Image (cartoon, rainbow, N blue to C red; front, side, top):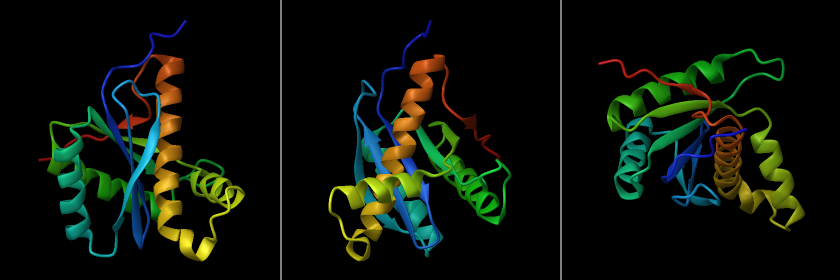
Length: 158
């Protein structure tokens, strides 16, 4: 059946143009929780803050949501996220960075927040964190089911 899940905390990142949602899980990979929303417009500052979070949380890996089209293709947003993930991977090596298909995570996150009564105007930064939580939950479920690390690894280019 499944090999189960590697022990260790993980961070998940939902990269958007304006904001970057960050989530973390417990060392047993059971519960994913929101961490913070990092302003995304100043990319060098965002990368610095993410490196600080990696130092603080000491994750075994960082999972970055890869925005694909509904048909599975990759557009300009996916290209941008791949570049961002590449830069992050170089900055936090040897901590691995993995890309995980994140189709519909923001939609799922906004629906569940709306269901719990969070207003969308106030909830924008919360939605980014919630989307990161959804990405992390998908990564954990994928690893639990397959016994393998989720998504695809980002090669560190030096």
